[in-house]
Amino acid sequence: MIFMYGFLSKLLISGKLKFNQGKIVLMGEPMVIVPLEFYIEATKQIIDSNDRKEMLELYLDAWEAGFCFMHDVAEVYKMKKYEERYRIAMDTISMAGFGDYKTMEFRRGELTHFKIIENILAKKFIPSEKPVCHVIRGFNAGGGTIVHERIMNCIETECTAVNRDHCTHMNLNTELLNTNKDQEIVKDQLDLGWLLKKQKKFAKVIDKNILD
Image (cartoon, rainbow, N blue to C red; front, side, top):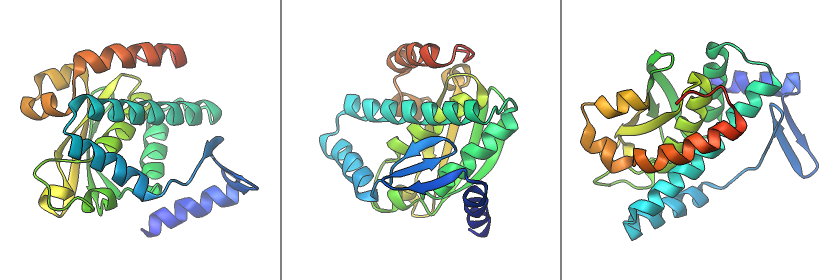
């Protein structure tokens, strides 16, 4: 928590976070403050409808938002090193208020494995039989695609809504998703055939350096 405040202070002092009349700009990107209730209602609608297509569309929307944010930040600040991109991605997602991110494992171009502590969105759905963080998974994977320079997708293997303690997410490239031991989770949370077709098309328009 102290580190997050330090990061926020640095952003304000350096002018990378600006509050102007009717506008918030974070590292060159226009931002808005969205109440948590918006994400709660979007998630609740998915759960109530039990509509898998609607869940995938919500995930994809978040993926595209995370992709665009990290792409623009990396371009504005000329972040050529993946370490820089990853540090900023983790700092900003933590600052967004979705919880405290702890990296468990990172392999460039392959995976990011992390734990989320105090995930306030997931807490709203205790008790749940299944993971609920579809929006957060999308943000993670879209931003992670810019970090790794490969199309990444995210699965949630543990969720605060289920275990009342923490969430565990894994950003994985397509090869690792196809060979992941938890195929039941992969197939439940993702439709790679449908997603990859749309993600590849979207990514190529914005950043031709992204690998499949």
